[in-house]
Image (cartoon, rainbow, N blue to C red; front, side):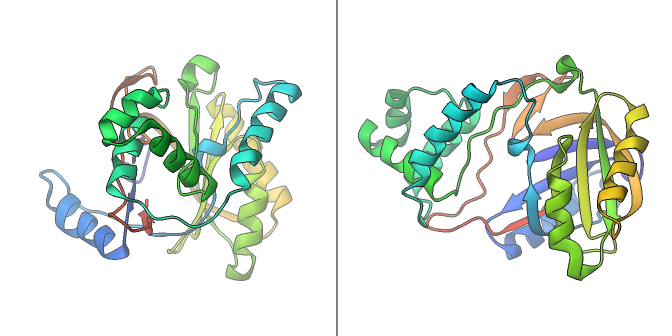
Length: 255
């Protein structure tokens, strides 16, 4: 899904998602592990996701505009329920991953279904929270030139509570629990490296149980949520994520 170049600790930080834990194992051991040039891999399996990049906000919209979007989301959410992923759904989602503004008529042609059917499937997937809407932008152009990753330790009985508190910080892009010595990973967008100590101090003040074990800056993002980026953070092309099996639910992720 995402490929980043950290400043220390490893040459690449890769975020991947698969339909099952078994597929994740095959991806790491059989596929990535056998690539030419790969010397070693350290895997951190995500056990709980508290917030992700799609929830991060630039706060560019006014209260009225945010209210309009929220009311529209609630209308779809009223029909919430579990759903499965069909071959038609996968075709629709792959097309939307490349361009979220793809016209309904075009989606219908790609999926081989009627426009009304495509519309119903999209609403059902949104309502079931199987997929979500996300708007990304070139962060350096908006002044957010620095992405810092903190590897933290939290007592297991406080892990969920702490993860939720950390997720409310406006700079936090990603926050998730992992299985490992450092059991909480936090990523935040900042304006400069000089802001890292202040951000970290604020986290420690609000979460006394949290201890930062390591911190690295992301030097470059090669791929973000399936989109290949140039050096300025703008999309060059897209590799559509397809982490679902027909009739299955996504069930494994790792960093």
